[in-house]
Length: 370
Image 1 (tube, rainbow, N blue to C red):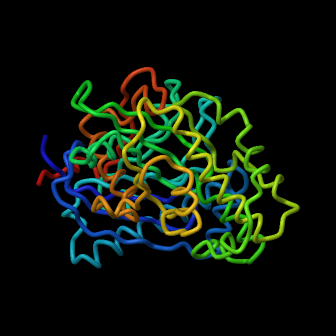
Image 2 (cartoon, rainbow, N blue to C red):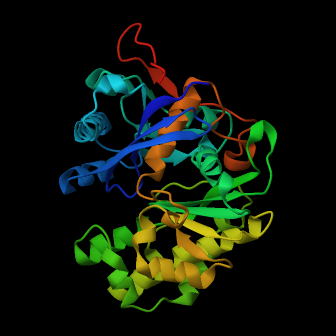
């Protein structure tokens, strides 16, 4: 299969902004890494985006604004790299998840693929999760097949923990299975940054606990962490997935700002450690992706609780800030070629499934091979 230049876009559950990354890929491997850029959300838009979580409020208006911001991110990336839209074959547009309830066979990522295609002049693949959820899968995580492609040259078993608003893990085993994909297991481990971010905003007025400073000044309350881990989700066998707001902060409400921050960080790390019992074999290494790897308090807790060396993904020469956007670039190409993006062991899909919907930039507008 021909490699295509694909531009991936990711707006994660942390609601910090849009990641955009360009890669040359055939969906199974990356032939060349292109530029990457992040466009932060303004605080007022972040508040509007937060207001529609759960499907409430002015969803249509926020969706239009979100789509237009993504079009701006595409233009910004291409302008910064001195490239034309005509050099890009497809955009992988994740959109933003405002509701995720796979048990009700419902997942909702806002983002208008047709509007983005018209605004950029580039074909768009979006709505990656719906087909999996409609078939009875969890709809998440979808990045494991991309992790597997990148990890082929690494010692395995290996665990890749992506810490966004929600944290998810990909366990990759030794050898190759059907279709050349190594043994995979993937699931959401628990909260990532979402609870800590919400706590910081409530107690400091800032959207994040910068460098984990608040958490590092406090003391984690182990009994509260154990109470969180007693919730049924953590004993449920994977694959499984979570909504951003699956857990609330009521158990830490009476704590000081510092102790609450420390306890929530400890909960995120303890949830990742609890995930190890489901692995088919112990990993020889943990690689940490997502914004959480920038938090020294969280990284310290992960190193204390996990049973193997813990490193940011940069130790494997991956770009941890770009990784999810790069993944959706690859998933868009897999969708164009009808390749699976979810599997029974990653989303509990009934079989390997492709996904995504294609919106053409103009009638007869074909993907261009490189």
